[in-house]
Length: 466
Image (tube, rainbow, N blue to C red; front, side, top):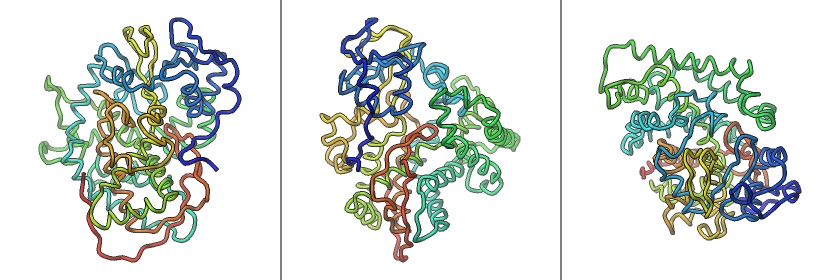
């Protein structure tokens, strides 16, 4: 049985050819050939990083691609330097740091744009995720959860991960298009479900790991599930733009984006709108984080009971700590990658321009000097001490920090509390679940298997938005 929060061993591959001597002026790292490093990264990326971190320290070099080495950072000062570097010193282009995401999100997605285009799109998106507006999604989130839980089978094992995917997809559909459009957009919902199922198919994940994004995302099968989604979103963009001017009336995200203009008075193009909407609809990481939150809570009945009691009291302070601790232990992405346009100094090494540099979310969140007993699920740590700007980084940092971070955290709180107000949960399996690759994130290996029992209805408190 795994230690609480453990990710599993790394095997013997990394015990061969290790060297403490750096070369090419870069930090030290494994000296085994690039293909073998690629195998280690592909098969067990999290244990691979942990072993390298233990051997080489807070900055080390991986050679998992022939084009460029990766410099992995896990010291808070190095991460701060990376996140606060001037925009002209870094590149985040899809072809350079996120080749897997461009076929999914589109080349105009804010996540994949370099400056100044990134900041222009960010300004378009920010109003939709302003604090007060995010609070307005609270009722949508709770309603969607109750509708979904009402369909769950009671008293028999069920997988929470796909049900969390259904919830987060429905929430974002209503937030993006408006609750009144849900029935009309039923075909898009089905198309998104087919795309999600296609991406998470274990055989395709194996191909993606072994042969890279090109082998999967250039296939006819991918286009068969992706093209209908793109066409439906673009058709909705065209329909909205053909409607009479309703400036100030649209409260959904698409209406806000469609009515937004940049500093030069230029609106987003149809293709830009399509890519940003598809990016929002591809909210798989939040569903994965929710599955982990329940998986962890069910291993700690006292913490589960505390969340439920707090929810019934109309509070959410401890639930917020649970969300933060889940995102610490099980971040959606293990790395935040940038390509240097100019040389920068990290860990006493002068890293040349053109090199890929990655802040390791996984290693940072497991630093014992910052998080005592780092493998333990202990939400109380975030009641004792606030999350650090450069030490709690599940959403990245700096000017490129995820614009929807507040939305995602509030959604997690509402889903957790509303589910627990509707059903009693118990783990279907005795042992903790190991991480397993999904399309982008690492999901519970058994999809967070639980048994649900309907709770008797009583007075329902409304949780306070933080």
